[in-house]
Image (cartoon, rainbow, N blue to C red):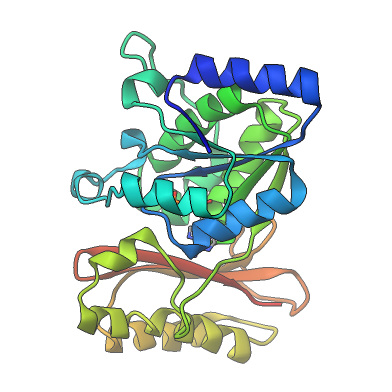
Length: 281
Ligand code: AMP
C-alpha cells in the first residue's frame, strides 16, 4: 500500500497511472476507525476497479456537535494494518489544512430538499460539510468508481446529486449495510456504547424489521407509532423514525404498497447517536 498525505502528489500519481496503465480507479472515502463495513466497501471497489484508493479524513466541518467531533475515534495505526491486510492499493491521509487551506473560503452548496429533512434537519450544516469535503476529495482522486454505504442512505442521495451538479463522470455504487450478528449496523460509534447499551442497541434493527414485516398499503402512522414505542422501551431517545420514498426521500403519507420505500431512523442511546435504515420492498 502506498501512503499519500499530500493531495498534489496523489493527483499527479493517479494521473500518470491513468495515462500509462489505463487502470480503472475505485475510491472509498472514510473517516477512519475502520470496521468490516468499511472493508466491504474496499472489497466492492476491488471487484470493480484495478486500483483502490481509500481516504481517511475526519472532516471537522460535517460535525454539527462539537462533542461528537472531539470524541470521534482515531485509530490510524490499526486502520493502516487493516487496509494493508485486505490489499488496498493507496491510502490518502491528508491533514485538515491540506483539504481546507485556511486561505480558501468554504463553498455553499445547493442541496435543496435533502438538506431540510431527516439528517439535514437534525444536523444543521452537516451536508454542507459533507459536500465541501467530498467535492475536494473527488477533485483530487478523480476516480472512475465511488463506493459509499447504504448505512448513510441520505448521504448517498446527496452525493449522487453533487456528482451530477459537478458534472463528474464517476460511477456511484451504494454498498449494502454490514451488520453484527444481532442485526446492529456496524459503525465507528458503536464502540462508545457500554455493554448494556450495546445489547439495547439491537432494538434498532428489530424495530426496522418490524416496520418491514408490518407495513402494508395505506397509512403508515400506526406502524410508526409502535416502532417509536419499541425504541422508547429499549431506552432510546428518538430524533426521527420515517418512512419515505427510496428514490427521493419524499414522505409516504399513504403508501400504495408498490413505490420503493425505505424506513430511516436516528436515535440516541445515552450520548451516542445511531442511525440506520432498511429498504421495505
Ligand atoms: P464513515 O467512516 O462513517 O464516514 O463511513 C465511511 C463509509 O463507510 C460511508 O460510505 C459509510 O456509509 C460506509 N459504512 C459505514 N458503516 C457501514 C456498514 N456497517 N456497512 C457498509 N458500509 C458502511
